Amino acid sequence: MFKNKGDRLESLIQYFYQELSKLSNKNIKVKTKYDIDGKSGTTHNIDVYYQFELNGIIHRVIFECKNWKNKVSKDKVLTLKAIIDDIPNSVGVMVAPKGYQSGTQTFAEHHGIKLISGSEQSLLAIVVQSKLSVVLPDETVIGEPFYCLMEKDNNGELTGNYIQNGDESGKFFLILYFSKKEARESRTDLKSVVRGIDKNHLTILCEYSEHLGLKLAIKQFVSTEALGVDANLLKNYFL
Image (cartoon, rainbow, N blue to C red; front, side, top):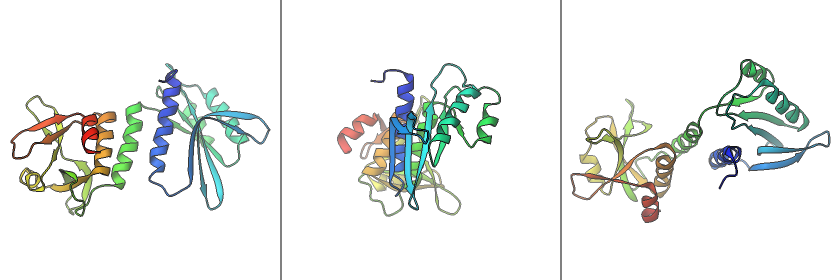
């Protein structure tokens, strides 16, 4: 349970970078409410602290999370600049879902501070899409437990898009097939290709469903209909 909206945003940013860190070979640390001493001897409490080592040098990213009702002013970015000036090899990032007041972006860019705004859903979308781009199933992946249809471009390469089908109510579902043959026979688009879904891919699709609203369905064996299914049910039975 989160004590307030700020805690929720900080936990989301921590999750965001922890998940992206799994795609990297670097030695990475991500902490919330992290205390670090600056060159001045002052202890700074950092909302989200991200650290990695590259070529023997420790690099630090200092996040300030402002989950406020109003837009963030330039003064708050100035405060962040003072913190990163006091912490060696650090850069600053401010996250504010409601955005920033006029002139704040120009000030931040001048001092090399990154400003991020947008909904939780948009942040999570970056995570999921990044993970999908790394683990797109190729023709060697065996469907354990499912197969699906994916989109290919004119060169036969996967675009990263999973093909979804609509029902009578206008809702669209990503259909999961138990049989590769059934998936192949369901192809109605020349730009589609059958790909296996293993447990790693299914885990990511369940995340996509839970956080971004992707609707999943299972095509029952030798049935003409697909049955909508909850991501938690899929995880309980197949992961």
